[in-house]
Amino acid sequence: MDSQTITYREALNQAMSEEMERDETVFLIGEEVGEYNGAYKVSQGLLERFGPMRVVDTPISENGFTGLAVGAAMVGLRPVVEFMSFNFSLVAFDQIFSNAAKTYYMSGGQFPIPMVMRGPGGPAAQVGAQHSNCLDHCFANSPGLKLVMPSTARDAKGLLKSAIRDNSPVIFIENEMLYGISGDMPKGEFLIPLGEAEVRVSGKDVTIVASSRMAHMVLSGLPEFEKEGISVELVDPRTIKPLDMETISRSVRKTHRAVIVEEGHPFAGIGAEYSHQIYSACFDDLDAPIARVTQADNPLPYSKLLEAASLPSLEAVVRAAKGVLYRD
Image 1 (cartoon, rainbow, N blue to C red):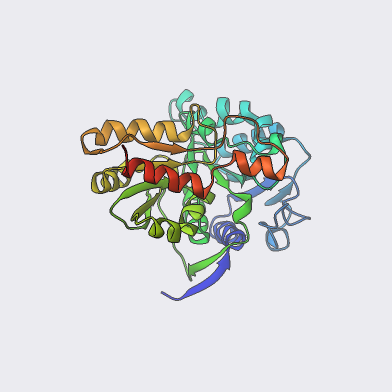
Image 2 (cartoon, rainbow, N blue to C red):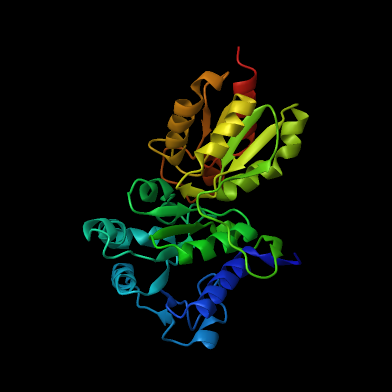
């Protein structure tokens, strides 16, 4: 198949454009998605192409437009809600947790909620504690929601198209620091199923489980692992819920060691769930306790130096890998 090289933001734009062209029930709603082309220019050109009835600019009212989207989904539309930042989704938590996630169950299956809630999430660069929340563990804890965190342009497009076609509410968290990265993209129609992890790098010594920007950090550090004589297998879950434990377990049974890297906090984080499931599935295969590398358990500082000290680092990941390999 022919390919093209596009950025992560262009991949998201292509996914929405193609799905809006394919299905007239799909529409985009959020702050500055129309006239301004999106805060991060992800919706560039969509207003001109599809008009204001399908690319809907809203007031600064996340609770309001998220509730509107839930109602639209109940009557057969497929809304794509853009949060300018997933930190602002906190304002809409009641709509997300009480309505989007639970309506299908509480209606006895009468009202599926085919909607996507997408936008940038997690720490960016010096945006302060209130704009640096990693909320993936919150969404993953709510039955009824699916959760996707793509790390590449290819995954961003393929997974977003699948999310838009899914009949469940899907949380789709894009990392702000990835919008400008480029990658090869197949030309023509293609989708990536939700719930399938990908082995980014094959290795034999230690399995590292990492998503989104953390997957890129591990990839950038492969020369460091090689210097230490460590053969890393990197598994990127891509879809956090449903989680592809089969791929993760197969890798851990191969390497007998696991390091989990996450951008969020340690207490009750996504990595805690990964650890539990790995222990449950692979206890007899493990030659060392699972190691976790996380953000420090404090609000993220604004200071550049303190921010860097609080976030996961490549040095910490290499140290963790050495720790599970060379235990005293």
